Every structure is written in structure tokens, then in C-alpha cells.
Image (tube, rainbow, N blue to C red):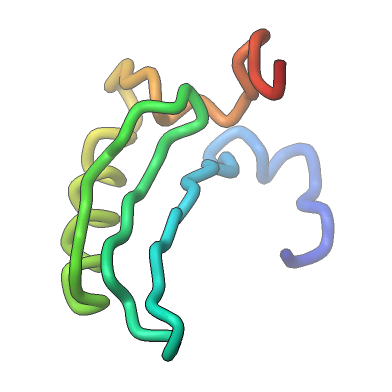
Length: 82
């Protein structure tokens, strides 16, 4: 990540967290993948790497300012890791 932004830059910017979970074969080939939000909800699934950009774009559209999508929150849920 870049250096810590100045406080005035934070007004219009925020970090988002999206987890990519992959199932790969013994040969390292992608078998199945999921994009998962911090709440644990699956954002989308894919079987080919070229499907990822559209899933991420759709998720980012949901995270646009003024939209209240739960999986765009960059805080961990209270019960995460328990």
C-alpha cells in the first residue's frame, strides 16, 4: 500500500477489503474461486481468471458513495475469527 494519506485526502477516499478464496489443483490450475466481503458473504464465484474483473467492477459499483452495501464496510465484523 502507498504511504499513509494526509488527513484531508481521507475525506474522498477509503480503503475497501475484498477477499479472494481459490481452489487450485495439484498442478496449480484454478478450479474454483470466490470473492468474499468482510461480512463473510460471497460476492461472486468464478472458474476462470478472466471472470474476476467483472465481479470486482460489479462489487465496486455497489460500493459507490451514497450506497449502503454491507460488504463495502472495511471493518471486520465483531464475530470474525471466533
